[in-house]
Image 1 (cartoon, one colour):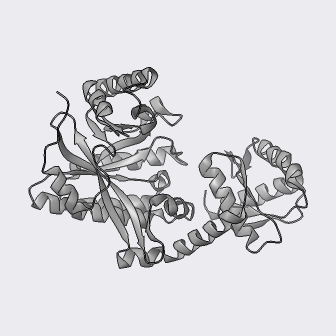
Image 2: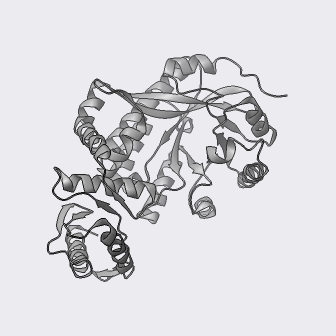
Image 3: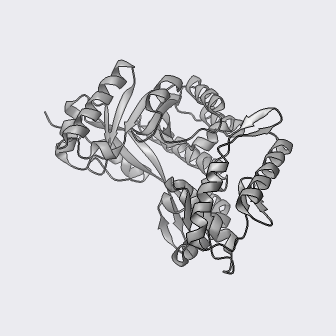
Length: 372
């Protein structure tokens, strides 16, 4: 929109909130966060928040464009320390959960303080090697070999220990800083793939890409530069995009994905079956792979409904020339079912837990026993 038009939109938004929400003053915290105080109790506030969301259904007209706006609310006690930050954190949690609003609690306050501290430490963590990349193996169900893996990021924090991604990825995404972390993971994955190749093993590696990055020309340019200088065939790299991801600029996202595909990178839809645009994604995106979400896979061998969904997805994908990965395989019976319906790859704790690069290479050198 440009800074001037974005400022105009925020002013218009503030005006509408003041009229509908009876706020005397509304403050802008960042590009997409507004904060104000109210004297209403929680029981009185909930219907007002529902009303404010309803008011936003009417689009704004800015610079000749009709713009839709949706709101997610966080609520915190106004006289508590850091109330604005606590409310913003609650709103972030609500948005991730797909809820219209969320009330901040004291327990979340400690979590929020830790997360904001982590955000301030991120750059140093990347530079000092605290950010680690582990690899969860994928088994090729045709050959019985581990010839692919998914890169998973961890933070080896000097105080908190090994942190899983749920502790810091959402916060970094909300802060608009996921590009640097993603490029660091991509760079490490490329280095490890090169070492595997030097050792005589071609192991494909998948890297998760946040939907927000697919509107960034800067990220695309830097990622493509890394790929060009990788020293490994681009076909060894797969970018995974979550199916439930919401693209703010769909045309831009498709163009950037096309540029990655043209460079030889493979593209995968992660968590397939959990989003709202399943067939549309297959139609619009240059996809080479689907990953069926674990919620459908883990009981497919015993649940008739899950079995039908997984089997039909495999058939559809293959008719479209798309490979299929089933994630969430946790026992031998599930693996046998997935292999029996012609799925291409399997992933899950039964196949292997996330491993350092060297241990993955050792595992990939050994055949895995599959059902006959």
